[in-house]
Length: 263
Image (tube, rainbow, N blue to C red; front, side, top):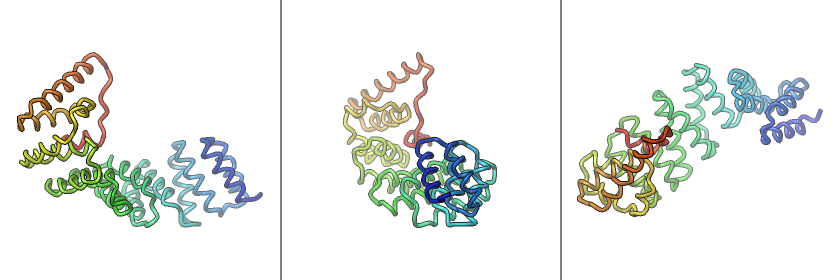
């Protein structure tokens, strides 16, 4: 058996979402070559994809004894430790993972999103976002992640506002960033700057907002500033959303942007 060719075939099957066929190839390969670390790692990734968490852990642990596994493999291992109740071990592996210098930016986004689900891992989610900023200082989304998790951890709101200002400098057209900063500035008594920040959102764009929390924040800011036209636009949009909700069982999605406003 040509180990490399069999591994490549298994990879190809995995990419086609033919998970069980790929596992069969790897099982046969590992019978002949049980110390093939890359095969163990791929097996663990596939098992994770089909939610065999404990099997995935066993395979990835076997891989770590044979080769330095990839950042993706280490992420899956840490995640599955958490999913199977091994919280302390998961924390340790995530901490080690975030020290690596070869983590792709896309993986850092997945890591921060996953870690952000758990209050005891928020500090690591913040670390992942900061690492993403180091890789790409012009990525507004990564900077927003830094601001979001700083807020979750109770950093002074003035410090969070400074990060959000940076976010808007990078991407001034993204309305969600402006709403988040405007709301935060209004909370800390900087109503004039809050108004200037959200006033930059075009009136036509205000009509495209489908987040009730966002609209409520804007209504308050525009009301305090005496901007009747923008206040009216947001109020009409909010009433429209509430009317739809009353006649529908569907719910508005709550994303990182809108949950940032819940303070």
